[in-house]
Image (cartoon, rainbow, N blue to C red; front, side):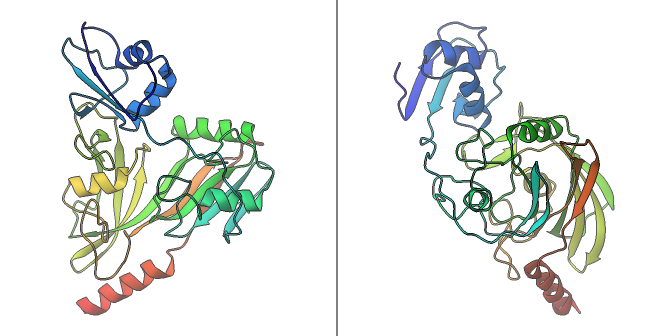
Length: 303
C-alpha cells in the first residue's frame, strides 16, 4: 500500500497489536515508524489516542494521518545563543522564549537547530533536522536545554533521559492559591482524542508524574518549583490545568494573561552526568526579564 496523506483501515480479526497490524497492512510504514506515529498521535483507533501495544478488536477503525515529510535542507543561521557550558560532547544552552527548538510545519527557519549548525558547522549526531537535540522545550518556554555534539554523547544523554537520570527543575506561576504547599500530580497523558495538537489526561495514556512545591504566594497567584519525574509532551502545562491551576499566560491549556504574551514557565535547573566522565554537573538559569517584570506587575497591582 502506498503511503497517502490519510489511510483508513477496518480491523477484520481481533488480537493483533496495533503497531504490528500497521506494519502488515502498510508495508511502507515500518513497525518502528508506526510506534513513533502512534506516540505522536498520528494513528488513532476509533478516533482515540492509544498505545502501540493495544490489542485490536474486530471492527475497530484505524486512522493513519501521515505528517509532512521531514525537511532535508536545514541551513545554519547566525542566531545568538547563550551558552552556559560547552565541552567536546555537549552544550548547555539557555533558550529564550519564542525560539522554536527544531523545524516543524510553520517554523522552517529561525530555530535552535539552525543556530546550532551555525555554531557547530560540522555537527553530526545522526538527526537530519534535529541536530544535537536530545530533549525539547516548547517554543514559549524559556530555560535550559542540552545539545549533544556527537552520536556517542547523544546516545548517552538520551539514555539518561529515558532512565529518568536527568533531574529537571522548572519555575511556573499559576492562577490561584495552590494547596497543599507540596504535592504530586499523577495522571496519564496522551494526545487529545479530538485535537491532535493538544495533549490531555486520557485513559490508556503514558504514565506521568509532576511534583511541585510552593515558592511563594502572591495575592491570587502561586509561584511554584516544578520537578517533572517523567517527560511527556506538555506535561507540566496539562497536569496543572487538570487540577484547576493553569499556568499564567498559557493560551492553550489556560487563559491569556494581561501581564505576559507567553506562558510563565521557565526551565531553571538541570542535573545530569557528563557523557565523557560520568561526573554529575548541575546548571541553573535565572528568571528572564519578562517573567521577572510580570511578577513585579502582579505584586504592584495587588498591593
